[in-house]
Image (cartoon, rainbow, N blue to C red; front, side, top):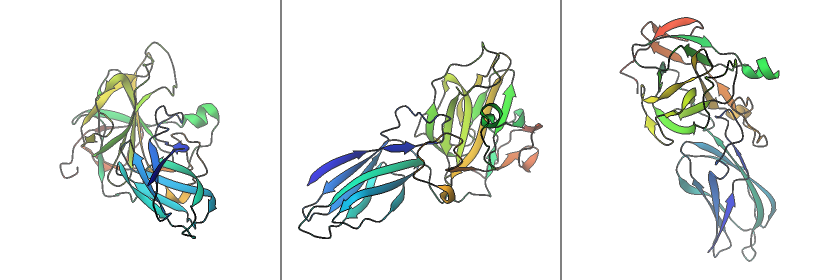
Length: 296
Protein backbone atom coordinates (compact mmCIF):
# COMPACT_ATOMS: atom_id res chain seq x y z
CA UNK A 1 0.00 0.00 0.00
CA UNK A 2 1.09 3.58 -0.66
CA UNK A 3 0.33 6.31 1.87
CA UNK A 4 -0.15 9.97 0.98
CA UNK A 5 -1.08 12.93 3.18
CA UNK A 6 -3.09 15.93 2.08
CA UNK A 7 -3.00 18.89 4.45
CA UNK A 8 -5.82 21.30 5.00
CA UNK A 9 -5.82 23.92 2.24
CA UNK A 10 -8.62 26.03 3.56
CA UNK A 11 -9.64 25.98 7.21
CA UNK A 12 -12.38 28.22 8.48
CA UNK A 13 -13.28 28.53 12.12
CA UNK A 14 -15.51 31.45 12.99
CA UNK A 15 -15.74 31.08 16.73
CA UNK A 16 -12.83 33.42 17.36
CA UNK A 17 -13.04 37.10 16.57
CA UNK A 18 -10.06 36.91 14.23
CA UNK A 19 -9.75 34.79 11.11
CA UNK A 20 -5.95 34.59 11.38
CA UNK A 21 -5.87 31.52 13.60
CA UNK A 22 -2.39 30.66 14.75
CA UNK A 23 -1.75 26.94 14.85
CA UNK A 24 -5.11 25.96 13.32
CA UNK A 25 -4.11 25.52 9.66
CA UNK A 26 -3.18 21.86 10.10
CA UNK A 27 -5.91 20.84 12.52
CA UNK A 28 -7.16 18.19 10.08
CA UNK A 29 -5.15 16.02 7.71
CA UNK A 30 -6.32 13.41 5.22
CA UNK A 31 -4.52 10.14 4.61
CA UNK A 32 -4.80 8.54 1.16
CA UNK A 33 -4.21 4.76 1.04
CA UNK A 34 -3.70 3.21 -2.39
CA UNK A 35 -4.84 -0.44 -2.36
CA UNK A 36 -3.62 -3.29 -4.55
CA UNK A 37 -6.91 -3.30 -6.52
CA UNK A 38 -6.30 0.37 -7.54
CA UNK A 39 -8.97 1.62 -5.15
CA UNK A 40 -8.14 4.42 -2.69
CA UNK A 41 -9.26 4.78 0.93
CA UNK A 42 -9.44 8.28 2.38
CA UNK A 43 -9.01 8.58 6.15
CA UNK A 44 -8.75 11.63 8.40
CA UNK A 45 -6.94 12.73 11.53
CA UNK A 46 -8.30 15.58 13.68
CA UNK A 47 -6.15 17.23 16.33
CA UNK A 48 -8.57 19.63 18.00
CA UNK A 49 -11.69 18.70 20.03
CA UNK A 50 -15.26 19.32 18.90
CA UNK A 51 -17.40 18.55 15.87
CA UNK A 52 -16.23 19.73 12.45
CA UNK A 53 -18.10 19.71 9.16
CA UNK A 54 -15.65 18.44 6.55
CA UNK A 55 -16.25 18.99 2.84
CA UNK A 56 -14.13 17.38 0.11
CA UNK A 57 -13.88 18.94 -3.36
CA UNK A 58 -12.31 16.93 -6.17
CA UNK A 59 -10.99 18.18 -9.51
CA UNK A 60 -8.93 16.86 -12.46
CA UNK A 61 -10.49 13.44 -11.84
CA UNK A 62 -9.65 10.53 -14.13
CA UNK A 63 -10.82 6.88 -13.91
CA UNK A 64 -13.31 7.46 -11.11
CA UNK A 65 -16.77 8.87 -10.46
CA UNK A 66 -16.52 10.90 -7.26
CA UNK A 67 -19.68 12.43 -5.75
CA UNK A 68 -19.77 15.59 -3.67
CA UNK A 69 -18.87 14.75 -0.09
CA UNK A 70 -19.69 16.36 3.24
CA UNK A 71 -19.48 14.77 6.67
CA UNK A 72 -19.53 15.77 10.33
CA UNK A 73 -16.46 14.36 12.08
CA UNK A 74 -16.16 14.19 15.85
CA UNK A 75 -13.58 11.48 16.60
CA UNK A 76 -9.83 12.10 16.46
CA UNK A 77 -9.53 9.82 13.40
CA UNK A 78 -11.68 7.73 11.10
CA UNK A 79 -12.69 6.52 7.62
CA UNK A 80 -14.12 8.95 5.08
CA UNK A 81 -14.71 7.22 1.75
CA UNK A 82 -13.42 4.69 -0.80
CA UNK A 83 -12.63 5.68 -4.40
CA UNK A 84 -13.23 2.87 -6.90
CA UNK A 85 -11.50 2.83 -10.35
CA UNK A 86 -13.66 2.61 -13.45
CA UNK A 87 -10.89 0.71 -15.18
CA UNK A 88 -9.31 -1.70 -12.69
CA UNK A 89 -6.09 -1.76 -14.70
CA UNK A 90 -5.46 1.97 -14.34
CA UNK A 91 -4.74 4.24 -11.39
CA UNK A 92 -7.17 6.87 -10.17
CA UNK A 93 -5.97 10.42 -10.70
CA UNK A 94 -7.43 13.42 -8.85
CA UNK A 95 -6.75 16.68 -7.06
CA UNK A 96 -8.29 17.38 -3.68
CA UNK A 97 -9.16 20.47 -1.68
CA UNK A 98 -11.01 20.23 1.60
CA UNK A 99 -12.64 22.58 4.05
CA UNK A 100 -13.33 22.12 7.73
CA UNK A 101 -15.65 24.34 9.72
CA UNK A 102 -16.15 24.07 13.46
CA UNK A 103 -19.65 22.80 14.17
CA UNK A 104 -22.11 20.17 13.00
CA UNK A 105 -24.52 21.10 10.22
CA UNK A 106 -28.21 20.37 10.82
CA UNK A 107 -27.85 20.80 14.58
CA UNK A 108 -31.20 20.76 16.37
CA UNK A 109 -31.33 23.28 19.20
CA UNK A 110 -32.69 21.93 22.46
CA UNK A 111 -35.34 24.60 23.06
CA UNK A 112 -36.24 23.07 26.44
CA UNK A 113 -32.81 23.65 27.92
CA UNK A 114 -32.54 26.43 30.50
CA UNK A 115 -29.14 28.10 30.68
CA UNK A 116 -27.42 29.26 33.86
CA UNK A 117 -26.11 32.83 33.93
CA UNK A 118 -22.29 32.94 33.63
CA UNK A 119 -21.41 33.77 37.24
CA UNK A 120 -21.53 32.03 40.61
CA UNK A 121 -24.83 31.04 42.18
CA UNK A 122 -26.41 33.85 44.19
CA UNK A 123 -24.63 36.71 42.41
CA UNK A 124 -26.75 39.62 41.19
CA UNK A 125 -25.80 40.97 37.78
CA UNK A 126 -27.21 43.54 35.39
CA UNK A 127 -27.08 42.41 31.76
CA UNK A 128 -27.17 44.58 28.66
CA UNK A 129 -27.56 43.75 24.99
CA UNK A 130 -24.20 44.53 23.41
CA UNK A 131 -23.88 46.75 20.37
CA UNK A 132 -22.68 45.26 17.11
CA UNK A 133 -19.26 46.90 16.88
CA UNK A 134 -18.84 46.05 13.20
CA UNK A 135 -21.79 48.27 12.40
CA UNK A 136 -20.84 51.00 14.86
CA UNK A 137 -17.13 51.32 14.07
CA UNK A 138 -16.61 49.76 10.64
CA UNK A 139 -19.93 50.38 8.84
CA UNK A 140 -20.53 46.64 8.41
CA UNK A 141 -23.98 45.15 7.95
CA UNK A 142 -25.32 43.39 11.03
CA UNK A 143 -26.76 39.92 10.65
CA UNK A 144 -30.54 40.04 11.34
CA UNK A 145 -30.29 37.45 14.11
CA UNK A 146 -27.12 38.79 15.75
CA UNK A 147 -27.43 38.95 19.51
CA UNK A 148 -24.80 39.31 22.22
CA UNK A 149 -24.86 40.27 25.89
CA UNK A 150 -22.50 42.18 28.16
CA UNK A 151 -21.96 42.39 31.90
CA UNK A 152 -19.84 45.19 33.37
CA UNK A 153 -18.43 45.42 36.88
CA UNK A 154 -16.17 47.65 38.94
CA UNK A 155 -14.22 44.65 40.28
CA UNK A 156 -12.91 41.32 38.93
CA UNK A 157 -15.08 38.25 39.20
CA UNK A 158 -15.12 34.57 38.23
CA UNK A 159 -16.86 33.57 34.99
CA UNK A 160 -18.69 30.22 35.08
CA UNK A 161 -20.00 27.86 32.42
CA UNK A 162 -23.67 28.25 31.49
CA UNK A 163 -24.14 24.68 30.28
CA UNK A 164 -22.39 21.32 30.12
CA UNK A 165 -20.12 20.98 27.12
CA UNK A 166 -16.59 20.59 25.80
CA UNK A 167 -14.06 23.41 25.50
CA UNK A 168 -13.21 23.63 21.80
CA UNK A 169 -11.34 26.93 21.52
CA UNK A 170 -9.29 29.15 23.81
CA UNK A 171 -7.60 32.46 23.02
CA UNK A 172 -5.34 33.67 25.83
CA UNK A 173 -2.86 35.99 24.13
CA UNK A 174 -3.94 39.54 25.03
CA UNK A 175 -3.03 41.77 27.94
CA UNK A 176 -5.84 43.84 29.42
CA UNK A 177 -6.55 47.49 28.62
CA UNK A 178 -6.52 48.76 32.19
CA UNK A 179 -4.22 51.68 31.30
CA UNK A 180 -6.40 52.81 28.39
CA UNK A 181 -9.66 54.72 28.17
CA UNK A 182 -10.86 52.55 25.30
CA UNK A 183 -14.50 52.30 24.27
CA UNK A 184 -13.84 49.33 22.01
CA UNK A 185 -11.12 46.74 21.47
CA UNK A 186 -11.08 43.46 19.54
CA UNK A 187 -8.05 42.22 21.49
CA UNK A 188 -9.91 40.08 24.02
CA UNK A 189 -9.30 36.59 25.36
CA UNK A 190 -12.04 34.02 24.78
CA UNK A 191 -13.36 30.57 25.62
CA UNK A 192 -15.74 28.70 23.30
CA UNK A 193 -17.76 25.70 24.52
CA UNK A 194 -19.68 23.28 22.30
CA UNK A 195 -22.83 21.73 23.78
CA UNK A 196 -24.46 18.35 23.22
CA UNK A 197 -27.03 19.73 20.74
CA UNK A 198 -24.34 21.29 18.52
CA UNK A 199 -24.73 24.85 19.80
CA UNK A 200 -21.89 27.03 21.03
CA UNK A 201 -21.45 29.52 23.86
CA UNK A 202 -18.74 32.13 23.41
CA UNK A 203 -17.36 33.85 26.53
CA UNK A 204 -15.22 36.88 25.67
CA UNK A 205 -13.26 38.95 28.18
CA UNK A 206 -10.76 37.00 30.29
CA UNK A 207 -7.68 38.23 32.07
CA UNK A 208 -4.50 36.98 30.38
CA UNK A 209 -3.34 33.77 32.08
CA UNK A 210 -6.61 33.91 34.00
CA UNK A 211 -8.38 31.10 32.13
CA UNK A 212 -8.77 27.97 34.28
CA UNK A 213 -9.88 25.40 31.65
CA UNK A 214 -8.15 23.67 28.75
CA UNK A 215 -9.24 22.67 25.25
CA UNK A 216 -10.85 19.26 25.27
CA UNK A 217 -12.01 19.61 28.87
CA UNK A 218 -15.60 18.71 29.76
CA UNK A 219 -17.27 21.42 31.84
CA UNK A 220 -20.56 21.45 33.73
CA UNK A 221 -22.88 24.33 34.63
CA UNK A 222 -21.09 26.53 37.17
CA UNK A 223 -17.62 25.20 36.27
CA UNK A 224 -15.21 28.11 36.81
CA UNK A 225 -13.80 29.19 33.44
CA UNK A 226 -11.60 32.10 34.45
CA UNK A 227 -11.29 35.67 35.73
CA UNK A 228 -13.00 38.57 33.97
CA UNK A 229 -10.69 41.13 32.34
CA UNK A 230 -10.16 44.84 33.01
CA UNK A 231 -11.73 46.24 29.85
CA UNK A 232 -10.47 49.81 30.31
CA UNK A 233 -9.59 52.23 33.11
CA UNK A 234 -13.14 52.27 34.41
CA UNK A 235 -14.56 48.75 34.52
CA UNK A 236 -14.35 45.01 33.92
CA UNK A 237 -16.45 43.44 31.18
CA UNK A 238 -17.66 40.04 29.96
CA UNK A 239 -19.45 39.47 26.64
CA UNK A 240 -21.25 36.24 25.75
CA UNK A 241 -23.47 34.89 22.99
CA UNK A 242 -24.86 31.70 21.46
CA UNK A 243 -24.63 30.33 17.93
CA UNK A 244 -24.80 27.23 15.73
CA UNK A 245 -23.60 26.23 12.27
CA UNK A 246 -26.40 26.61 9.73
CA UNK A 247 -26.79 24.18 6.82
CA UNK A 248 -29.07 26.61 5.01
CA UNK A 249 -26.27 29.10 4.44
CA UNK A 250 -23.26 26.80 4.55
CA UNK A 251 -21.02 27.65 1.60
CA UNK A 252 -17.70 25.86 1.13
CA UNK A 253 -16.51 28.43 -1.38
CA UNK A 254 -16.49 31.12 1.31
CA UNK A 255 -13.27 30.42 3.21
CA UNK A 256 -12.80 33.90 4.65
CA UNK A 257 -14.31 33.95 8.09
CA UNK A 258 -14.59 35.88 11.31
CA UNK A 259 -16.63 35.39 14.46
CA UNK A 260 -19.50 37.36 12.93
CA UNK A 261 -19.48 35.49 9.61
CA UNK A 262 -23.20 35.57 8.83
CA UNK A 263 -22.65 33.17 5.90
CA UNK A 264 -21.99 30.24 8.22
CA UNK A 265 -23.40 30.78 11.69
CA UNK A 266 -26.72 31.76 13.18
CA UNK A 267 -27.31 33.26 16.61
CA UNK A 268 -30.13 32.35 18.94
CA UNK A 269 -31.64 33.60 22.20
CA UNK A 270 -31.84 30.99 24.97
CA UNK A 271 -34.05 30.91 28.02
CA UNK A 272 -32.24 31.38 31.34
CA UNK A 273 -33.00 29.89 34.71
CA UNK A 274 -32.73 32.67 37.31
CA UNK A 275 -33.92 33.35 40.83
CA UNK A 276 -36.47 35.71 39.28
CA UNK A 277 -37.84 32.92 37.08
CA UNK A 278 -37.26 31.43 33.63
CA UNK A 279 -37.04 34.06 30.89
CA UNK A 280 -35.16 35.58 27.99
CA UNK A 281 -32.74 38.31 29.01
CA UNK A 282 -34.13 41.83 29.01
CA UNK A 283 -31.48 44.48 28.48
CA UNK A 284 -30.77 46.58 31.54
CA UNK A 285 -32.53 44.26 33.97
CA UNK A 286 -30.88 42.82 37.07
CA UNK A 287 -30.91 39.04 37.60
CA UNK A 288 -29.78 36.72 40.37
CA UNK A 289 -27.83 33.63 39.30
CA UNK A 290 -29.64 30.44 40.21
CA UNK A 291 -29.05 26.77 39.41
CA UNK A 292 -31.65 24.24 38.31
CA UNK A 293 -30.41 20.89 39.58
CA UNK A 294 -32.44 19.05 36.91
CA UNK A 295 -30.26 20.30 34.07
CA UNK A 296 -26.71 19.16 33.32
